[in-house]
Length: 70
Image (cartoon, rainbow, N blue to C red; front, top):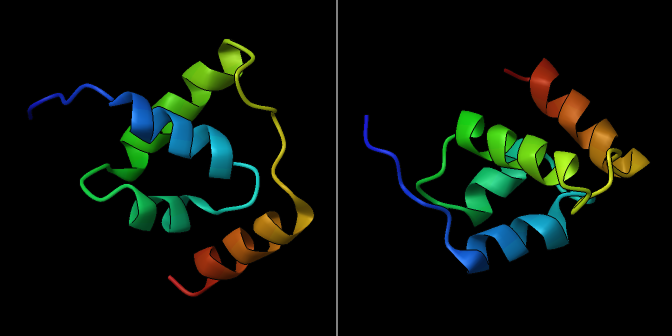
């Protein structure tokens, strides 16, 4: 498995959209990034205080709906 460095534009996109999008939606915005990769970067950004710990209520509802449909 090869590791790809995160490009600054990808990190900015994640910071900008994390609160309002689900992981599945973020995966569509970040082609080539796995769910695990995105979750690891989110954890790092939270640790650094670069993003808040909570998603919007609407994003949480959509995530729950997406998980139920799998």
